Amino acid sequence: TRHLRIIVAMSLSTALRIAQSGIAFNQSALRTISHNVANVNTPGFSRQEVVASTQNFQGVSAGVSSGEVIRKVSNTLLNRLSQQQAVVGFTQARTEFMQTLEVAFGKPGSSVSIEKIVNRMFNDLQAVVNNPEFASLRQNFVLSAELLTDNVRALDQELLDTQFAADSAIDQDIAAINEALKKVYELNTQIRELSLGPAGSGIGDLQDERQLQIDVIASRLKVSTTRGENGEVYLTSE
Image (cartoon, rainbow, N blue to C red; front, side, top):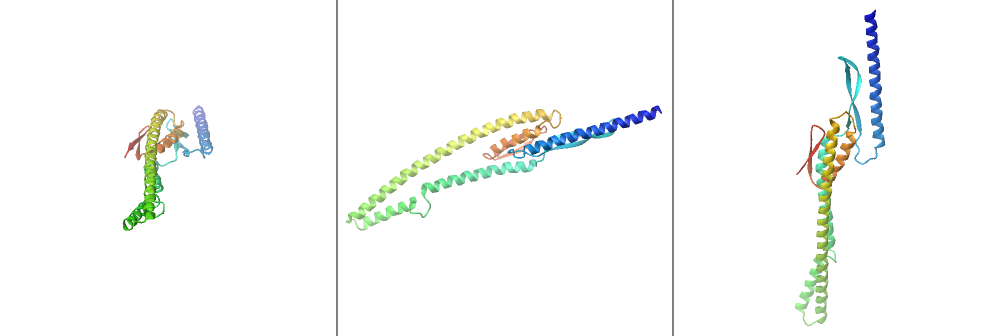
């Protein structure tokens, strides 16, 4: 009888432990779901999920325990996305530069393009060569030459302004990259420390924040990412 009572007590204790673990897991899952809903509009936020694991007591299954809270993302896709962001950024910068040049030189074939103004001046010069006795033709040539001079001077200034703007943009990009690298390093340190502690201790939000900083770098510089064993991310430029 005493042995039976011990078995019953152990069975009740195990059942209570299983129930308690189930409640604890559901509470953790609800907290994670609430966190997902609260941050659905947060830039860079990734959905999180609690990983369940079997809980054992004295070699017997005793319910479920709340494991790590993970981000529901594909690291492979994130790496490929980071690599393509630099391509997109370069294409946009080149397009903006070419549009600036088109405005400066004038659209090919338009009456105000440098091409047309140069052709007009040489046509007026040829007319003067053929008929030097006509003052009106000489005056037309002078006006055409002055117009070309004014446009070349304006073009030179616009190209200098474009070069200055490009140099300034490069300086800003370098500053942004350096600042983002600093933040990635700091976040790597925090994530590594948390990964060595209790599971599910807010690593997901730090990983999202780190990915935003990686995106800042990747939009300006083509990089590849590799991941360390404690959650760190290492960047390699290409």
